[in-house]
Length: 297
Image (cartoon, rainbow, N blue to C red; front, side):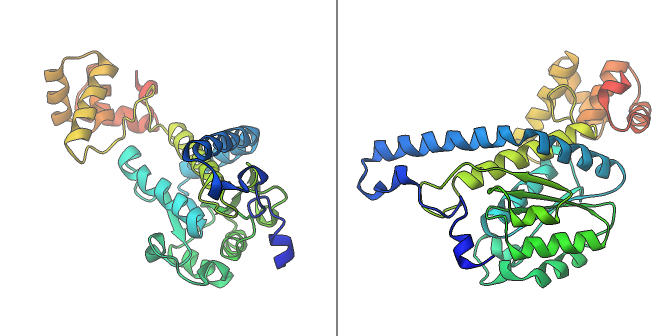
């Protein structure tokens, strides 16, 4: 894609509504941004069928020992990293959801010049994490043409892993390399070319959907409670206790005692209380059920 073609991308063109934003009153500009942000939600809604298809395939991959691997550069890469790292405390994931970004960990806080333009760097990074055919590689690129992401999908295809893409332009180049291509278009940014705005919002919304529904699909949620959450601080320990109380209608004291007996596992504690079994029996029930609490009761 040449420079002229890049300039025609929806994420790169000028938004006529904000052409004089430097002369707007603060309230006027905030109102405009709020109105433009609403377009991100609608754009995601229109892509729900593709998002659903992606989630179904990701659930299948996770159940078969695969991983969901986010790949991106710049803001897109950071969105992937944020979603992946939040899965650890929320769902007690180990390496089920991971992220790599152009330029490595340091690029999360400071851009690494030229990293996103290298397909070879993506190949090296995927080989570094031992990409396997059971994995799903989801490449995230606002422009839909980032070389690093294209290189990642090419390598994923070589390894026979599932290839998915998320672009914030229609007819994106990256879609040509994906088995499942998610494309959203929320229109030109208020600040021309600043894809951390609406494009980033679309990416955040979609990644929230993908990781959350995928975790539901592999049994890490009971009702609407995060029963696989890691209680790593006082707030989360209190939340764990409240989850057990609300799921089982037990007393605070009972919740504390059973959580202690379950070595802090909310899921195990809930099954113990709802079925009247021991910790060992509850763990066995969960193993047989594939981790789904509702199948144990």
